[in-house]
Image (cartoon, rainbow, N blue to C red; front, side):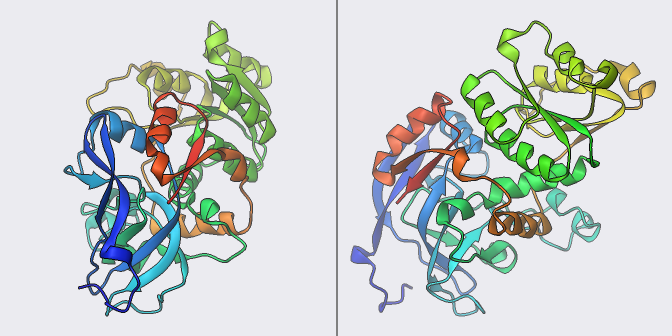
Length: 353
């Protein structure tokens, strides 16, 4: 039951509720009650992401409508459960959207993103308040200092995934790395890869995003809509046209997967980071794997370790986050936010309840 001493007007809040694909309504709903191991956060800033767009278009297999959508956020603690320790009202917090079980084969093997019982059911950021489940409170709810804005902190979850992706790419000082896709994830990859001391080539179809990539430190950019052969254009920018040392796919399209595989040099690393639809098939020239000894891997999600390292990057101001937030709207204008998402306008949109 709600603590009666808390000043919640009418015990209700505004929230963007998903009912079905293409149907989201801004409604007044009850503020969630929390359990003994849970906390309630007043959302100060939430961000859009590609998952929100896909959810709007086709729903989400983990959530049954109606539900409040959005999962990238930061805010203030307003209520804590009786069993929660060290977390108190007024603290500035940010949470990742999942937590591993720590007891299955994969967790014991240190592969927490592959957890058999991965809890990945935190949703509700496009609202005035959000309830954080206990398993996330205990592992992936983090405090952040006042030098970090709520909008900066809200980048934690996607940046955690990028940190995981960069670590798995085995990038060495001085490597040439190509990133296919200059959306939010690709531009975060660009910045984290540069921290590793690599030279970055980035490709996309939108000039606006490529201009931002240059501002953020890309060595070269390629508008793939204006060239006949993106693979050859990338190779031209590498020593002896041999290809990149590391190639990262940050789009999630099978044709881009195939191009990315062909952009890497012999013995290079290919990170197929962008997720395609289930059942998608891609074609790979077997000789590239055997005779060219290229390494191909997928990287999914994040782990509590990557979440902590991502927050350190944010707190150290190592990532230019402000440049990635291209629009800001109050929650009351969620329909405008959705329109921009669907049109691929901007990079990240901040929603301020």
